Image (cartoon, rainbow, N blue to C red; front, side, top):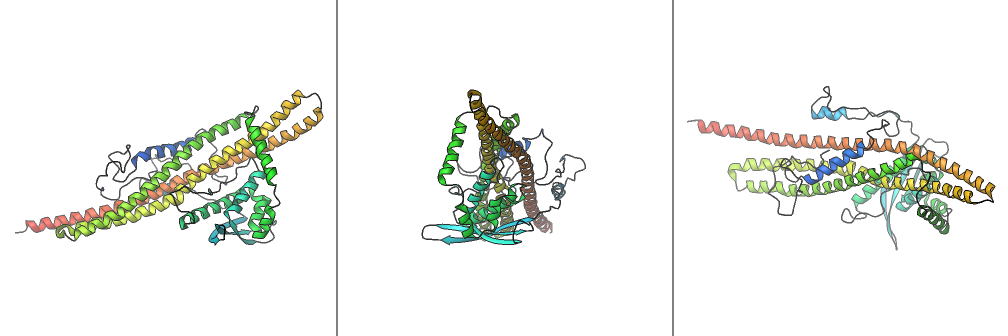
Length: 456
């Protein structure tokens, strides 16, 4: 993946000290290449996908078919870039879906005390438990937060899809800007559809209420939840459980999950940071190029002998500038959201593993208490039996969801990197064709001038 490479234009004047390319930049990349970022990004991307090289369970997200294996060094593979793109297409099989959700039409609301955005949530379904086949409601971000908390409460060891953060990084985009609202809308749309595709979460009663209840009905339903003191009590118990120390009888597979997630979290965070830095440098390069081309056009007015060449360079830079803008759109729509989503997923997975350990810790505490008590053994034995069932259910839920999540993640990553590769190929082919056309025209003009000089 070379999202940061440059080929489109002749090099800009040398940057002033302290600006531009990093210390890792080599002689090959043209001006504007953030060369220092290339190595870590590629290395981190490779390591994220290499975390499971020893496993053979890679499957397409929510499908039972394996990804087609493609050997890029196979003698039978066509060598042309266009043919290479086709080798990496993933074949989709028809799915029997009965729940379709769309999040769109954001609206701004201004009151005396706050400003907020609501989104239209349209649901179409053929499920019998729904009273109608189509629903349309409006929801604000706080409603999505409520749904996520209810899902975590009902399914503590299932992997709940992430929501976009409530706050944004300063300097990236302005809150309530069109760009911010659209980015959030897409993330909320994905959040609901990931829940709809989940074999367990999709049948959650709170999820159904979220999709179907009018605003006043949802508000009334929210008030029926546990009170503040109850939630505080749960938090205190969870903290107390974690303070008691590590789990004594944690199965090995959950220790391996924890180790995996620590490595995954490190790699995906590196990828996310570098990708955002690349995008920022790409935007800076794009802005420079927009000023670079017109300079040649202005210069051509005072250089009659090379006016055509200068105008040709300006035209090439303009075309490559447009190609760069399209590639930037590809990064912001395909790469950045996926990487950041899995940064959030890594935090969610660590939380799920902690909740599983808390359930295990409750069982361990009861077993220890039983060993130290000579009376009330029957009561303790009954409680231990219930906790053993609870631990078994938690373990089974997490194991099933873990396998599903890994398949999903691996498919998303491969698909994302493939999209980036396709966008880069189109970008470089377009820029290469632009400059080759310019060189060809200059060669023809040079031969014409030479022939005219040779004539008597």
